Length: 487
Ligand code: FUL
Image (cartoon, rainbow, N blue to C red):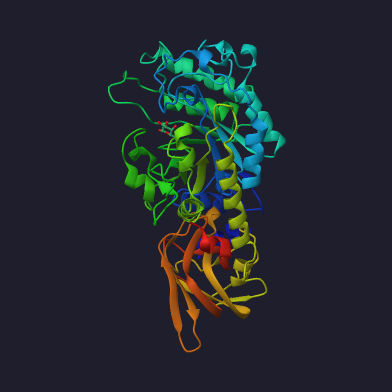
């Protein structure tokens, strides 16, 4: 009972741990909350929650590879080759802004070791290129453009460095920290730091001091989220197609993950028994390669393919990290920009009108302030919560009039952790209920594409859950004609 009350207390509106204390509590209550809920049920930090709500973000793979037509440079490339004649980071930022991509993560250093900023710890950088007379700084121009267009900025700094002579010795860890410090101190707020686990076969052995890297990020950019296979804040989803698992938990057991290891299935599905909150990031390129290759100009992903990525990433409790590789001029290619625009237009059209507007929601079990009506208020911080100990339950939504729809949105109140194991959605057909969708996990957002249905009553049932389920939002939508016709 005490737990039920306490769950209730922290449940509505959701108050992130960092904002505690809220209403006065006794020391005993406080420790009970931490012992029974926070410890046992991993929950997002405010940074992780804010990151998850970005939903769609961009990657920009750009370096000397763009000029050598390679995916992995070997570090022997002549910096003189780097010369993007029409470089314009504002064009990238504008395209991302218009596409609703909220953050750009730039490959400040890829595996070849070439630095896009004038690092004082190496000469293998823009300093020795003809671009801007050797005085240019891509990291600065991209971070400035992000701020100008209201985007967040993040950096990819490859641990694997095929140029740096100290790579393979303990001294390299200091070199990496030095470069990280430059990136984290000279370019304003950094929202995400991307640590890639990739490394070629037969390359020099290197023991990375990941803990030291992470600690430096915490010290210099405490608001940033850290990405790697093993988090600590955001994990790789286990493939480069941008697809989260059909079942996708935001929890994993971090100690079971080896960075650069091959636990792809584990990363893809997450682990309901995992003790760490590390949501999945779904990276994918708009083209076959991560870097720009003119020969791939005809292979930009189609609108249908991008929509599939969206529904399999954002629609499966992930964040979609879409790579758009700038070309040799230093610009996003027009085909890519046009495709991004199409994607945004179609998503806006489909999700503009939530048919639950004006509907009523009722559950057989509700208690103030966790009423079923909270799932219709458009506010992910309020929710319908079942009493403690109850792991299933249903709510009914009655629309003002029958409406045709073919997209269902469900959002769990993940501020309380991720709990729901399975659900069904039914529509009233006049005589009986008919199941129109079913699934396992929900998490931040679950989007279901279903055959068109026309109904005025819809039932959302949680059929199993770890602890009492909490649903923040339910939405019903009709795909735009353009989406339905997308190829
Ligand atoms: C991989 C890298 O090896 C690719 O080049 C690319 O950067 C991708 C996002 O991560 O591990």
